[in-house]
Image (cartoon, rainbow, N blue to C red):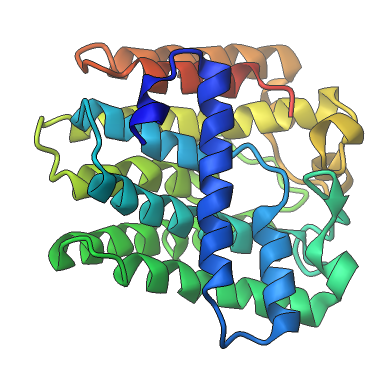
Length: 303
């Protein structure tokens, strides 16, 4: 973990985050001796495919604000948080791709889980990933009160008032032209809540010992929406090979997006505005360069 902190180049650092995150997930899956092999295969396929590991990066970047040097114990704590978040993210993508949701057949440049393994196995694998995330987090050696609080942060982010609630709003508003405020509310739940939990779990882990929670929450809220705005822009400006998923899917499904509401040019301006607000939120926080780099990465990415 110290090596990760010592990497100055952002691209190299992000590549290392991906490797570390995947390695920890592989170790976790290797320990699941009681899981039927057929189910385990699908769980691994959903979780270990090529991905940005943005959420993992947010966890590690936030930790650098609280600790200059992270020891082996703290590194283990962070690895449990990262794995839990990535498992939840993987489960959400499997559900999102199902025929009853977005009905997509491409994810991260590969066939989606239900295309490769069938709907039943995809659904069950995703269902298994969700409790595994909390089991892994709660079985860590993190202090009991802190890991319960971390688990609660994750539950709140993904439950009825968070990610699931946002997905419901999404489904109910197909073909509707939402107001920008309503679209922002939907995506602050569907996309932003899990992104925000990457920071709030680290805040809980270190008991916000520097009093940065308010500023970090503002940063998280801005980049959570910015991520979705950029997603909407890429959906109409990039091809499927670049995105690793089906381009133009939102338009095909008649879903309200920032591009359909604001137009492409204004959507780009809005993404830049959110980026600037995120950077501003970090103005008084030392050792936040990595979070600034991630905000920059979010608005400039092409997939």
